[in-house]
Length: 435
Image (cartoon, rainbow, N blue to C red; front, side, top):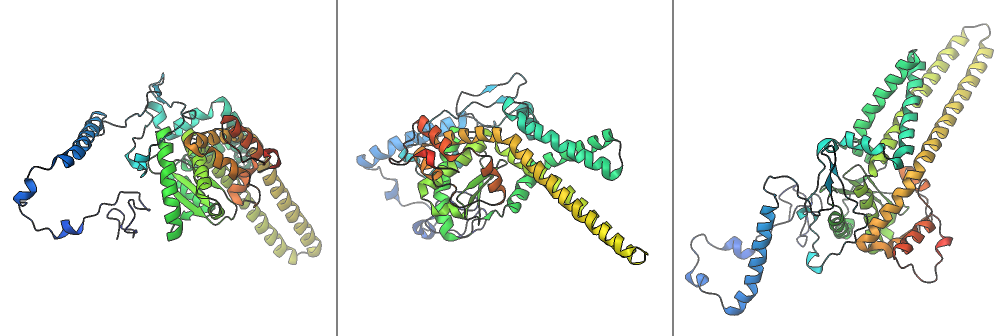
């Protein structure tokens, strides 16, 4: 059959579309062949007492839920808060509550985990503007290293602009600031998420076996995470890339990507990983990944442009040296200058990247502990310990390698989870594992 919402083909046994997440409604054969018109009289007869005893409580429950549903304001009155732990800020904006210490318990009656039926809390006031909310959060003490990193980016771009376009230093810095603010706006938009997915080879999950395995795991963790923090978006999408190292990352507000290597682990360990990534979404840590990545991209592009200019100049000088009396000497000198310039540029690029990672490392470490705690409170602490103990067997690539370099050691993360109450497998020593 095909999803009536997006048109994708789905299995007849599926209750939700793997592509858009919409519930699948089916019409029974009896309903399809039943002729139109009034029902037979026997269908309107009084039901037997056993059937009434079963249906009456169900009807009362549905009526009660419907009245609560309408009273809560779903009919156009805006988002509904699930808890009373969130308050209004002094500026009228929404101040999100700290949900990280709330343990989530889900009953067996919620085994379908339809997270789309859960309400989504949204900020108000100035916090409703994503860019302003991000900038305000950057002023928090824990984000000062990232703020310094952004300032260094602006300074580097300003200096380069001043040198390339022969601008006064002040105008160069202003130009760099304008360019960088524009890049941050783009990074925090859906375009930024798309660019990061493309850069890291993240693609839609199309393999039927992968869909059948990952969809129920993702739906379960998504449901629990949204119960724990209603501010998580209702439109998070799961992607996959071909990295053989077991890992995952979340970015922006609606992107989560797992690696092919993660599929070699158990379902419970995959759920623990997804719970950790939902923790990053809940705490809005993912914005920094976008901004840092885009900052790297801008600086990389500028250095690439400089390298291209150096190479073009080298070619022009080489051509001119052919018509010069000292052509051979000029060609040798030109090649040497070009070689040294490219080495210096690459060296500066590595130093800048290392400096950025060092500045962001402290913030990233704290975020990892919080995300681990979020996964623990969803009920995946033991499985997360087992997963962390295997990290490091296969080296990550690209963004995953950069993220791993700024993460705490796996042994420290396991120790924190044990302090929270996680049970680590007997006979294993957390101190012997490293991420």
